[in-house]
Image 1: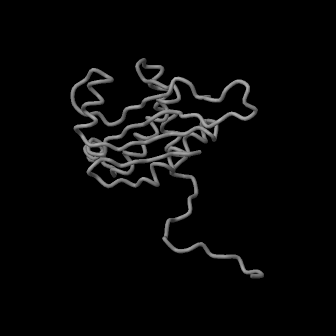
Image 2: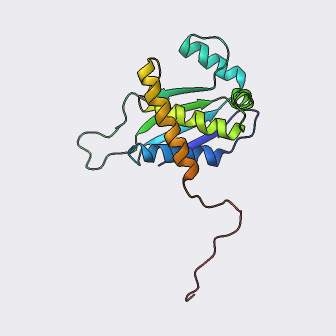
Image 3: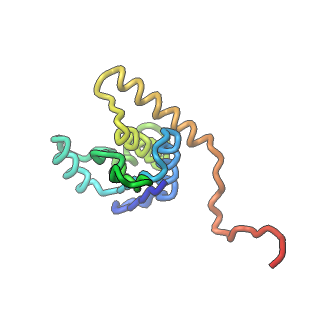
Length: 167
């Protein structure tokens, strides 16, 4: 499942973790593995301009989601569906830092939460009504708990070991 992460903010982020949690969420939500997702981390000024332009609200926000109109971009006469662009999730690490401090956890934990939240928005979840909020936030927590519990290989920088055998 292709997930592209680009950090254009002034704050270092764990791009591999963001891509990983997004792939995990998409997999758990049974999204077509050919779907592509873009995650962009931006500075406060850029997020403020996006927030005002698209939501009509001043100042920066933590996450915005920009879904594509259609998930399946393949032509009806194609034998195999092509890759589909799911959409874009835009994160603001500077806002995530403030929220993480207030919540008593790390910025990385906050970015995992925000990336999960953004992907759920791309998949059509919302929290405008109390019942929608309960469903979305419950699913969000379940996915984050699953991500944290999922076994992962540590990133060591060491070359992969080879199995003994003929050369």
